[in-house]
Image (cartoon, rainbow, N blue to C red):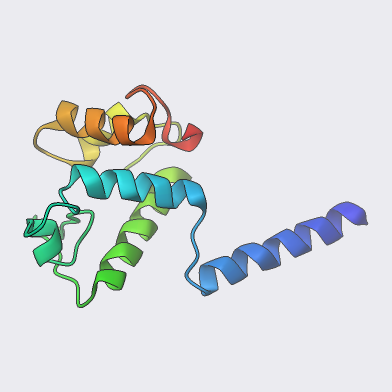
Length: 130
């Protein structure tokens, strides 16, 4: 009975966090590292102009242009959540190096090194272990 109550309470907390727009620290850390690798913190960068901290692209390859900075961050957080869940393009257990092969078509080693350095880990670190 105690385990069921704990599970229910934990489920409620997770739903509230997601409903209120909160994301786990792991998700936020990875998203910030990606944003840095994508130039978000560089004044006048394409990421800033498009309000797109992750430089996320559409299926046609064009960059998304978001209506607000918060919309851009929300999209990046949701993308990172999918990366961590092993759904979609990113198999469960993907390393930062492996993720770089999917996330960006250019300068993949540079991207992986930047993300890993920002997180203080190796490019061979699994995303779920960050």
